Image (cartoon, rainbow, N blue to C red):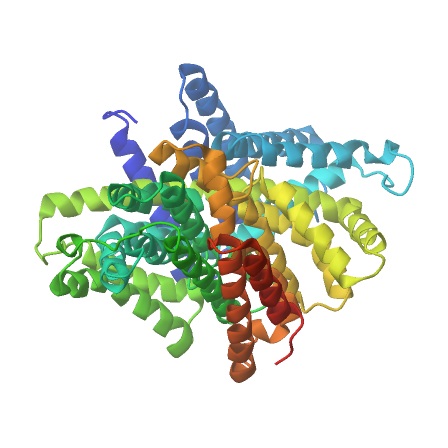
Length: 588
């Protein structure tokens, strides 16, 4: 980004922020207006801002102009298009439809690479030519005007409910996260973590766990979490003599947990609201005990590694003083308190509560950790908020728009129902084999596709099968979401591990092996949610939920020590066996 273009991007980010806030406070805006405008604002970021070569910039500008024209045409003609019931009329509308689909694929490709747009392109090809596939996996054929119309001018496909979540909820929380990250909240996370765990054995690693859990709960991105908190925690651990592979693994595993840690949980939780029909607060409460268990397993794993290595705490001189902890913690506690009050006490929608919390967060941008005001620093913070929010909103938009193509084609062609039937028959009508097949599918798809998109695609085909086999819909969705997250630490594609390994200059395979041992909870907790259904029923049955959590915690502790501790192999195998029995066999 050149100095000449910087003001343009700052202004565009500000427009994006005000547009999404305006939608919350302005009342009802037609979906065929708000959702195309959401895409229009994302286009320059996804196609031009990320350009690295002159050709990419020129082609990005051309596609942006075409995309803007198409999005604005849909928004201005929303009344007429609503009367067409998803059926295109004339060559102009067909051309606009093709342009929108191609541009969305290119947005996603430039934002996150080839895998997701490749899946979406294959889905489109299936929609066009699937009638020529013999057998049950063919379809009866779709008129091009009907298929393209449903995907691009009706409230399905590009402008469906997933995009609605991106517009009205995810964008708001992304902006909220950008505001918190723009100020002292990040330092507040580090100070609280340092004060809470710095003096403990393995304290530097535990500081990474706490700070990454706090930061990740608002960033919702394992990679962003590693890059930000890791810049502080990784040098601190290696300086104290922690093995590089352990330091990188701790950061990768802790950062991966941000997407399952309430209150925000990235974009996935908000998509889950739309897909399950459950209130956001209910999903957040259901997710809290499993998330705590995940981080408990990481904590226990660090203690187990401390039996192998001398893992000292953070030196006293490097730990924050009490005043710094109290002052900087207010920079995230005040907005978080307002957010939680708005959702639980005030009865507001999550996005409205986030707007209230955002006001407090924006006011705190005027002050630093010493409670001093600087106009120049404040101006720089607000410009960074605009840039960060604009960039992140566009990335989420590109992912969700592209995933919406896949979901739209699955619904139009009936392929989703056919895959669901295949899953049911392949599992022999038994729940646990179906869970295994679903987990494998989530892991494979998640290796190349962002967590939210992998979750949406997998749950669209596997969710109905799992619920038909007796799972509560929320159980099925949380199970799929957790397994879609596995690829952050599981080879061969493990994004968080790659970044952390690169930052400490360690072999990524060594880091991945250690990360999988530390992050064993990521593999076991979703299975525990199935075996112990009350684990996610904290709101309705708190006593049974806590009892189930204690049982799983004992099992996870035994398994983690069994995998990591340097004891005799027979003792370790016995601990793992006891842990598995505690989680999956012993009743409460």
